[in-house]
Image 1 (cartoon, rainbow, N blue to C red):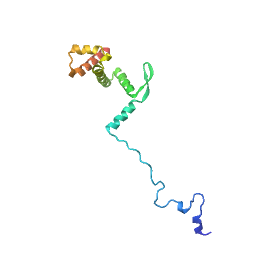
Image 2: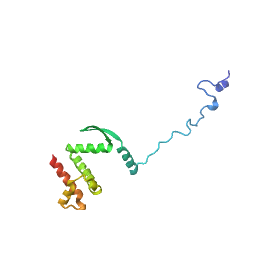
Image 3: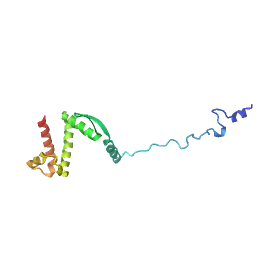
Image 4: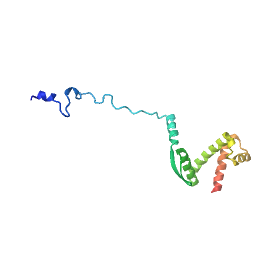
Amino acid sequence: MSEEGNEDEVVFRKPPKQYRWMPGVSGNPRGRPRKQRRAHIPSQVSMDALRIMQIKVNVKTPEGEKEMTIMEATLFSLAMSAIKGKAAHMKLWLRIMSVALQDNIFYNKQLGMIDGLPKFLREEGAHENNNHALILDMLANQSMRSR
C-alpha cells in the first residue's frame, strides 16, 4: 500500500481527515459559560443577610434543644454571654433590649408587656428626648441588683 492510502484509512482513533480538528479551531466554539456575577452592593448584601437570618438551626437551651432561626439563636447566644458577665456583650444586649422596649412602649401600648417601665419613666420625669438613656439606666440598675 502506498503512504497516501494510509492517510485516508479510517481506524479506531483516526477519523476521516475531513472530520478531524482543524488547526486553530476550538473543540468548544462557544466556550465555557461565564459565572453569573452578583452585585456586591449594600442592598444585595442586606437581602442575603435577611435570607440567611431566616434559616432554622438547632440550639441547646436550658430547657433542651430547640429549633430557632439564626437571628434568634444569635440573640440567645448574646444574652447568655451577657448573663455570664462579658461586659461588651452586656452593653450590646442592653442596647438591643432598650430599643425593643422602646418599640414595645411606643408602638404596641396595648400589649402591656412592661408594667414597671412607664411608672419608672413618670417618677424620673422623663421626656421624649431622654427616654433612651433612662431605659438604659434602669436596665443597668436592674442587672446590677440581680448580681
